[in-house]
Length: 251
Ligand code: SF4
Ligand code: FES
Image 1 (cartoon, rainbow, N blue to C red):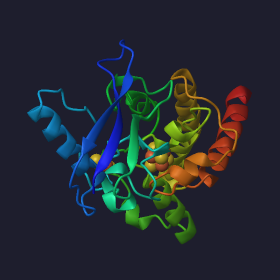
Image 2: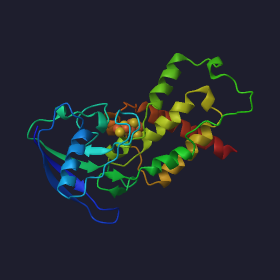
Image 3: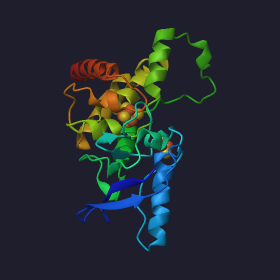
């Protein structure tokens, strides 16, 4: 496949960026999107041009590092796959492909296609964990009965890889799909009950202070999420947040 690539190039967070056009030739339809970018970068290095900076790590849909906006869609045209799992057979010979970073006020551009998603880390640090008693008296988790339906929903929420496609896709730059998945994976389980109210209040508070917008139920995040995280999690988080807010005012 021969392709024309329109790639966002930006030296650093302060400089203005612009789209540069590159051509790549003889790309196998079986190669992944990131392998195609590797080939582009080899070509650029051989021409004494600085390679395109982009994020990646596992390259198998687990780590959530890859984060490209491809032809106007987070993670590109395929469904329920990350950029690293996207194959070039989704495109046609002669196509022009536009590649941009995930754009949102909460994700400032670091360089080229790399954005700073540390806001997600700070939201997690605000409450996305379960404190465990390690005194030796800890109950075996397998001895706590959990309804299958709740376990399934918790596991589904736990598949969120923190990629940020939901934020990049949302017209409001809302992080609520991500935060609600991280809240739900604990609030659905007995082990998550102790810190349930504190967790949802602190994580939502941190989300707001990081500059993410609010959810207006457009549902674009659910469509573009590579892990199929459901909007039901946002509804659950809103309920948890409301009841925790009322309880905290009563104290
Ligand atoms: S909810 Fe989906 S799109 Fe958002 S961070 Fe998690 S996996 Fe990525
Ligand atoms: S590089 Fe890890 S999910 Fe894509």
